[in-house]
Image 1 (cartoon, rainbow over the protein chains, first blue to last red):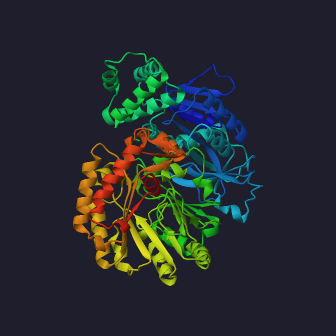
Image 2 (cartoon, chains in turn green, red):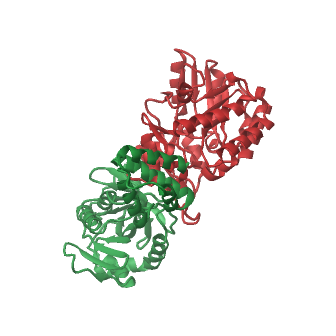
Image 3 (tube, one colour):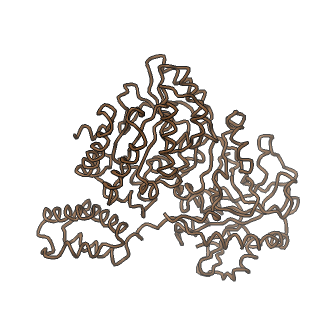
Length: 285
Length: 344
């Protein structure tokens, strides 16, 4: 699943159009658009609103190891070296109010320039541009990223969360129009979509828990544990043995059938089950 | 864990995180000059990166970042009980680097650290200072390459040479440099010293190929060991951990034959033997990260918080290996993992 977060509808529109996302009218707290594995939430502005939206969506649709969250939106720039309309991949987010920094893991290749970002809890106007000398390495600023990162970190690993920011201004004079915002996003949509396509084809590199055994094997193990009068700890041992055996031999049903042949099942007692487990252990080596 | 295609992941050290405090340190400058295309990010403390919650160690291992930091307090530790002390009373270790560029499936670092990023403590001079303080009290036997492989990182860091230089100035200090590297270059650049022990970990070729990703092949390591003994370096061979596989006897028999056909007993300082063993918390984490790893999913026995092969297999693996090594080496040159020794 790909979860895309934008603060404003104007930021989301090009992606809603491209992916033909449809509004999920069952969700009323936030505007959510979706199509299959892609979900887009409009969080509204501010890091708290953004954090709540992320938590809400992640609770409704808990992410797995191969899922990603993308925050796409406009940002201000403290430096005029960053042209309006240029897109940056964020590698460091600093929350202005606490001065805490967060670092999404940049493990996968991407075609964008990287930059760092400061999340403020107010609109930065050109008149109150007040970066201190120490802050000059913070080139970009927005109002959501730190909230999104902190909320997402309860559900995602640091490499599953990415922030793409497009420079819209150098401190706002007048609020930008929806048309201007959508235009800035549209200018970068092709590159973003190409990268999202690559990203969503990456497997998370982890076999989700519980997939070691298929449902049939799971029920076979449960039945076996019952017949052996396994305690909780014996059942863990049985599972570990069969896990190892499966990795070495591809399956374990034949092993259990072979060991079971000629034995009366279920076992009469726990000690008998224990002896059986020992035999199984020797056979697994 | 499924491996990702190389073109999907960033290259090694594509991101270098630098603590504010060490921005101007000469080691920082040297390392940054070696990676001109890396993204450099200033951080407050290495733990801001290294200790983030819920990191994916396996994925990070495929594309580790570099963290340059200053080590504070506890620069030198007393040796842990699961470590072989080789009969040395004052046995210490130090971690000037955390994590390793190799990717051994069974490596305890995967259970010990929350991140696969490599942390380099650039303030080696402060570690030297602390060692000097301990040396003022008694002689020191110090393992300098425990939670990393310094020789493998030598081209980037140069710490092996620094440690050898420091040891030459402090004759009560003996250092062990544990490695799987086949970096012969360093051997040409330093002089053999009786207080510097190069300790090569060796595993049969099959184990190396199956479980020791990115490490030099068995023959490459052996060739490097031969070069070291020829030059007169103190060499220790660590057949530790011994790793179980279905044909382990054949694998280890062949390996010992090959090793001792190339290296004479009098050319090496000693040998250590020990089966794979690991604290329970580490194994728990490692199993979660690598559900498809046979070496980690093996049904080990938990003995007071340390997992190892069950008693019979442990004894069989140790006795088998010991007998083969014993044919070539005197008893006093063979060190067994202490727990096993107690059991024997």
